[in-house]
Length: 318
Ligand SMILES: NC(=O)c1ccc[n+]([C@@H]2O[C@H](COP(=O)([O-])OP(=O)(O)OC[C@H]3O[C@@H](n4cnc5c(N)ncnc54)[C@H](OP(=O)(O)O)[C@@H]3O)[C@@H](O)[C@H]2O)c1
Image (cartoon, rainbow, N blue to C red; front, side, top):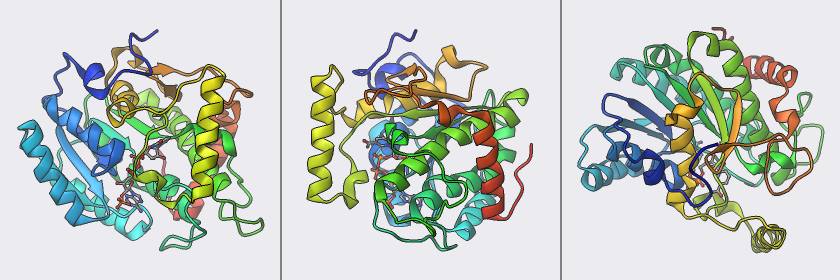
């Protein structure tokens, strides 16, 4: 049982750790939880690579983080996860510029956006949150293989309780689009992807962990309507009245990522789902936490792997 929990911050979990010589590659690293993860890891000496789709925001964040941490080893690489072409270009650029990746933090995400498609015609949430990261991870695997005790951390969400992956209709072609079911599907995929990675790459020492960071006010809520806000607030209040916790701060929200990426407690382990700096129990009922059994189901993880390979048009074998 970890010493850390709901209240812990990214700095708390990294206290006393020296990340000098470690390279952390963080998608969505110029905003919200990704930025705080980048800051905290850079503060402990890591070489930090921020990947994002907006070069101006990325370069500005690199400059800010260098000032805030005094660490000059921070860089930006362009990557639009909603375009397979951009993901491939990012992979090529990273392989050209970097010697290795020790910590791959698949953090970027979109939530509850109106129905839309990516450049390749995938439903936007599944396409960005899962398929973009699936292909990016494949592109970066040669660098991850060169890392020391490498870990891959997938930012999922308690939102995975909202739905499973619909293997026969991931793009909502045969059913009515529902922005929350779509988010739930993509966040379940983030967990099943960690299970699939662990099965294929765990034996060679590359471990993959999924997590829920908590509920945190960030730009993630940019597509939420007033009605969504009321619904979310009520959900949080109901949770609180049943003994659950409320919102976290951004430093608290980045703690489980930093913990999953560095804790000795998870050495040699993967295919897990964490929350509040702990491995979460399997729970098919609670709205307060835990991981749904379908998200850790190895057969479903294999189906997702095959579906993802078909959709991106490439095999991803060890
Ligand atoms: N905040 C929460 O309460 C909460 C709860 C559960 C899970 N999570 C998960 O935590 C992760 C981080 O979210 P956050 O709260 O920090 O939200 P955020 O501040 O909105 O950060 C999300 C990041 O993802 C990037 N992104 C979105 N679409 C992209 C694309 N097509 N290509 C590349 N990057 C893209 C965004 O870049 P742009 O600014 O350019 O769009 C931004 O940098 C997400 O995976 C989210 O699902 C958050």
